Length: 461
Image 1 (cartoon, rainbow, N blue to C red):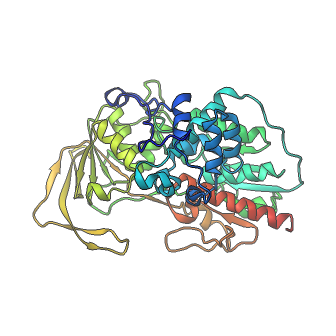
Image 2 (cartoon, rainbow, N blue to C red):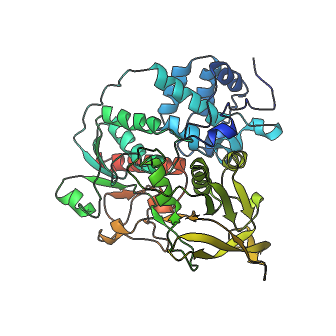
Image 3 (cartoon, helix red, strand yellow):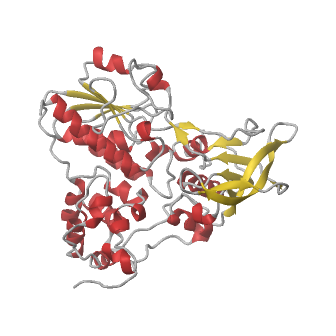
């Protein structure tokens, strides 16, 4: 029987005043009963509007119908037919701007909690199933994947299922890309990412860590000397941006990329960690996206008083509403409609203050958002001992600088066609290396598109 409640089942979570002192996962997940009840809110529409918002085309109504009947493993198999990382996507995808945006139930009330159901199904599978799927028969073709983030893992998984000999090259010592160095443990436990990586290994994918493509080995080397027939570049966007204001070189000024890498990958918050990181008392995080929320919430867990400094208002924050809400609940202070103009330090070059100027919103700019404008004479100071710049990232130039004939756009992204093919024959690319910093699911969609094109080219389809 359909559940016609206008409100989706709430997500159980840790108390804000408890979770802001630990790195355990905030959201606790649905119970079996909550999942089945939420699944019964789905109307199983014939036109499947929700699917048009999914970059990897998960068969959403079909998997939800199985959840409603209590067939959780069947639901997982439906999801995994098109998605390589269901436990990840269920946690970090912006469903409110994708599948749930088109849900018919959202016209009069809350949309169905598609992401919450995907997470439940993936977690149920991971805790109840130990079967190792049989390895596909080899097809005799060899493909290299550069980068083990969501684009690379998806491309590798799709090709491995077709029998390709796939090697994934990762610059860091752990596979997972942004999933392990960028997204905090309290949003995405690293054991989940490792399980997805282990699943690829069981299918025969080779993971080569501590290997910098463009440094120790070039793309040309992979194809000429190592006999890879095609290469997919999913190296992400790891080059951080800084404001061009005085004081950005003082001690205590981090890029969000470095700060989060030390916290997430190197576990710098642990007392036994070998990775040094400042344990600040007062922190200003500059920016308003999801990365800014992650950095602010990590700093809060280190015991700091934390400010988000953002030049537009609360309504214009680009971060997910859920992440903003969690940050507010945990005690992060939002200083909106203000912008940094200078960072100050003491005689030892340690940060001790950031000067900001108040802003007001004018007419919309080229992006369609109202342009922030400075209010003359409105400067004020925040006493802080740490500043984290969360202003976005761009693709690392190493691969483009070491690969002949690779066309790059004005933003440093690799230029590709609709199939992910670059200007180089049999060299494909996707994800943040092409678009700049974007979402996990969009990167996965790009990896899936490229895998299909690689298969068609190498098999002569």
